[in-house]
Length: 340
Ligand code: ASP
Image (cartoon, rainbow, N blue to C red; front, side, top):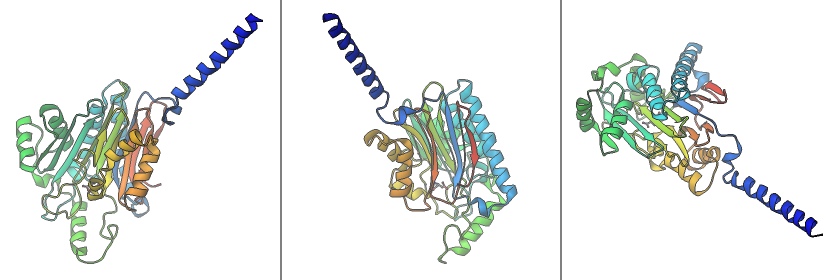
């Protein structure tokens, strides 16, 4: 009698323990999927409408995105840091004239180039950005130096150029960023000024800002973004890309995010920080947080986002016709795409 009562108690206790363990493993719903060892996503700008691009252009963009992805995967797969992967991937894309960052940066209204970039470490919340730089070949590397060598987060224009002198990073003439396709975009934009034409009509079919988000094998998140901004922008205009919380954000407690699109909108709505806040405060899964910001907070056609969660969940979503993007993770998943 006593023995069977004891057996009943044991049975009840083990059922309760099992229930508690199952609950603990499913607090946010995100933890359902097995945690990835590493995950990486990158973008080459939202706005690209693959149906309006030539087959050669699509091939060239996809090939470059694929190479950038391989560079990032190689860094993290071998135990390198997410920050190193983000910097290497973005440097590669900055050097490719196909993208609106570094070499292929768009022209501003004055016929020159002013470049913006930022990087963030999800482990420490350390961050660095540079805005409106004119002679820095790889703005993402200068942004990282702001994070690592100064007590500041954002350096702009002449001050950032002076910092570049001190750091001895690679420099170029401003005209080195000139490319013919971008010049034609400026001409089109100028011709359309005043006329009521949509962003697509004036040729901003492929915006081309670049970004990268990574979960590394040490469990750390990192994010970075680099851009030439927007064609025909006013002197001194700074977009969201160098602004932590707007165009870039990373926090090990939630996610790493990089945005692309209409920078003014991303700044107004602190878009990348909002994705993280939604996860932390509303307990939203990453996918829902990104979806709600794109569909409910921002206007249609405002842009796109890439994000990776602390468990390695990858989300790449956009409200534009397309977004040049690529992603891979430790499970063997790999994708390179522009359209839906
Ligand atoms: N967000 C960038 C900016 O406004 C441009 C882009 O992503 O296309 O400067």
